[in-house]
Image 1 (tube, rainbow, N blue to C red):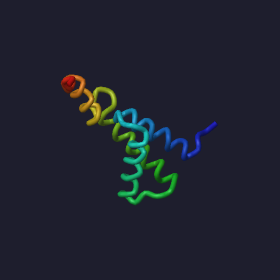
Image 2 (image 1 turned 120 degrees about the vertical axis):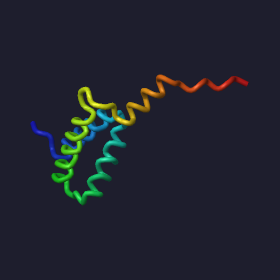
Image 3 (image 1 turned 90 degrees about the vertical axis):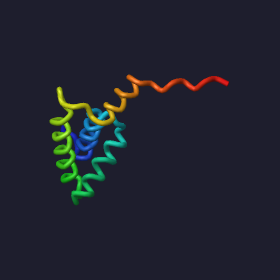
Length: 88
């Protein structure tokens, strides 16, 4: 059974979210904004656009590439945790 175009778009958004270490909602909003900026409308065109964005992100961050900005922030937070507030 093949996924609908909307289902395939949701899967692509999930893969972007996982790759960038962000929430699914944030990934979908990011892709939706980028598509609107590029003048991409319609389900089929947005799916193609999202898949192209995913391919670009995979080239940049997949495998042994650089870490996505959010992952770098998480790495920094883990390496340098904030001190606990002093108890009163």
